[in-house]
Length: 146
Image (cartoon, rainbow, N blue to C red; front, side, top):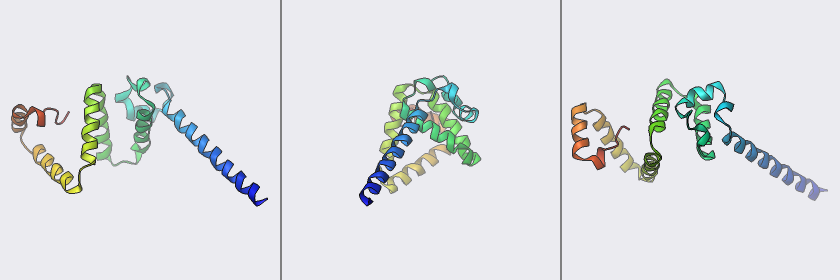
């Protein structure tokens, strides 16, 4: 009897996991028309390409839309700006951005802090100075801020 109960519990857990996986897959396959008004409002910069996004990309965007109401106003503004920038990028630019992000994530904490400090210093420069740096070193500054 105990063995049967244990087997039944395992089966119940497996069925629950299967249904949760199916629900997540369904979320990833939702069309733009099926999104809620609040999801469409947050994800609006991606409206024209939503139905062509890969399932994992949709899942990530739906996670952002789910968390959006809990974000501070500053973070919400940053999300809006980043989604708008992302929507204007070509697939090639997006792939490069993903690679740069992954390289940054793999850096040690002290190197990340150093780069953040340099970015902060760059941001505080007058626009003329930043334009000059971009002209002198396009490989380093060519896509900064895009």
